[in-house]
Length: 348
Image: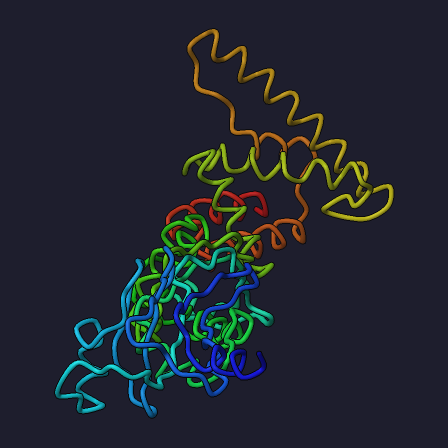
């Protein structure tokens, strides 16, 4: 009986792999000194591929299905072993199974801000994160370059390498896309497409295929976020200076209400804030009446400034703020010059 058990252990009739859902990418069939029976069956399930390796040399590759192992179905292995006729005895060979299903929801992210170059803002530091999906497309290349002769190779084993590839190619992807940074941050789909185009050939070198890439968030530096908010505000009011001053006044009212005063501190600041608020209310009422009568609206900023009175130091502070907005591209040279002339007249 013991002799029969020993004999049974020496020959393999069926070679197969049942995945256990543990993220395994490559698995070596346990030979343990056994040999494959001539005419035995190889069972490759859907989302799997199998590769025969003889004495370190890659031989035949099998896709999904049930395969009878003969010299006809093992042409490369037959050539490597120099079989000149149908072999009748068992043979020795390593068999590796590879999972070709998609490995989904693989996370990537920038642990530290990365620096990219942008045509509008120069050097920009950003954070981003998302996920991606991949699969094994070329098991022979994956075996040669990545998994090798290991008994078991999992997604966790290659996770760090793939995360590094993503981070390494972010800057190049943005540069190659030609999309301005602010547009790229607002359109995460285009960001993901640019990153995918850059990563596809890099992953192919490992025998992998990138099946999907998402960018779930792009964090702007604080200073750029402020500029974006100002650009959005200007987009809402257009290039009309009167409307711009209304927008600026409306932005200031919450700060006055908090006790900051904007143009001063304490009682003086509160008074100025109250005066600006009252003036703004008057202007809105005048604009409503003017609209009903078909007249041009009153410029909110100029009316509010006149109501509270403008001191020389306040004029200079306003000019400095406008110059800063011009430097950031929010105001044009013409708009800045017009407002500068208007404010300087108030000093005369």
